[in-house]
Amino acid sequence: MAVRLPRPRRFDVRVALAGLLGGLLLWSVGLATRPHTEPYVLLPGRWPLLLPLFVMAGCELLRRTAPRTALLIGTPAIVLDLVTQGNLVTILMYTDLMYAAVLYGPPASAHRIPRITGLLSVAGAVVPFAVWREPEALLIGVITGLVSFGPAATGLIVRNHRDAAEAARLLAEQTALLAEMDRTQAVTAERARMARELHDMVANHLSAIAIHSTAALSLEDPKTSQEALVVIRENSVEGLAEMRRLIGILRDSSGDTEPVAAPTLDGLVALVENARTNGLDVTLDAAQGAVPAPVELAAYRIVQESLTNALKHAGAGRVAVSLARCDGVLTVEVSSPYGDRDGPTAPGSGAGLVGMRERAALLGGTFEAGPEDSRDGKIWAVRATLPVSDTAEGDTP
Image (cartoon, rainbow, N blue to C red):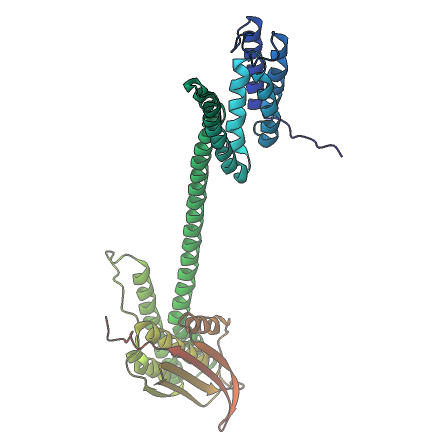
């Protein structure tokens, strides 16, 4: 099966044509590198000069597409040129083939060719001098070095610079890609965090408003309607305050809305009292001690969302909230009656459970929620375990 050589590059075609025309010009005026009287000129005359010239010009067509093949064919051609009177353009084209073989060839050849040509240059100087004992014999090694080792070394230097520039470019692209990935992940994480904050801060108050407004509309007792309207107003005011807090987080502190401190576990009492105002029978057992701020915020939000879910879906009965710290873990448990609800309900989207699970996962904890059997009947239980680092207490800087 015949091997099909790749199509030469347009620049290589120009180089080959320029070399061929230049060599023919020197040949036409009879300009050679050696006189025909030299003893090692085995093929005197003008016509033998054309064969190595044409072969070398053909090799120039392959200087980038097949550099090793071009060098292997060009080397016998330069040897043939040495036994003729010689053409300067043939020698120049061979130096270009040597340079191209190192620059465009495989990495192994790029490092092997300079070593081989360097050894040949040294041998070309030492061996003739040792044989003839004439200083002029050293010129053979010098000429060999100029024709072979010089272009090969130059090609290796250029290749190393090119590879270094390519590596720097790839590194810059990778750095930019990693920076873009980090930015995207940061934006996604921030959007998820703000979604959790918005849901947890507003959902409780809006659920209470929805339930009590439904009750106020369905009952004709003026006193009950008045109490429901009071609860609706309180939750509206608190919900507005929470929204302002969220706006304060988003806006720059130099604006007209200052950021408000994040809620802590000290606010659980007020949270439970608000739930009782909304109609829930809630008990609180919170003997957790000092915990880091991220754990404190996550625990508060889990309790808040659990009470919101109980307000929307729980049946009649007691809601129990407990927090306990043991063996470096803060355990949050909220249980509420599970079953059909007699009073009005508020629709749910499931985002609250997703948010609670995300909060626990971000701290390396666990979260589970679902119906369970207990002594008081079927309940909906929420349990979250949040690791507490001993070196990251809430009272440390």
